[in-house]
Image: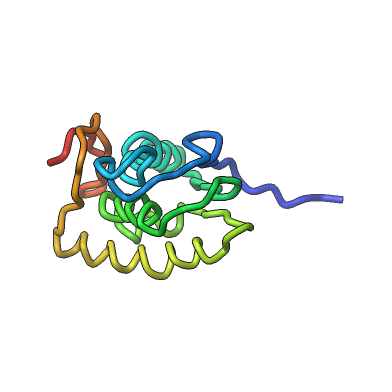
Length: 146
């Protein structure tokens, strides 16, 4: 019997790669925030997948849960820095335990943050972060963005 093999993918499991206990939206509000997750892990993982022509698969399961603001901030920043056109076909979110999170991200976060991106409403940064990537004019640029 033959199995359809999905092409290689970059995989990120929040519980094991980041934290079992995710926090609030911003670093200033507490540990393991969506802002921190984006800047320490999600941005670089997405860039790796993008450069390899692969999907980024993010597994949300097996944590103690999420505040919607954590997911909004993390995945919203991804849309802001890369655009919904670039992110949507390359990002797969897995959540068997809470499939509503996937729906919220795809239906609400994507559209809200694409509007912010188009209107240049810069995301709030509440901590100093190392360089991160943005896609500008089809070029990946890494620097500390203000």
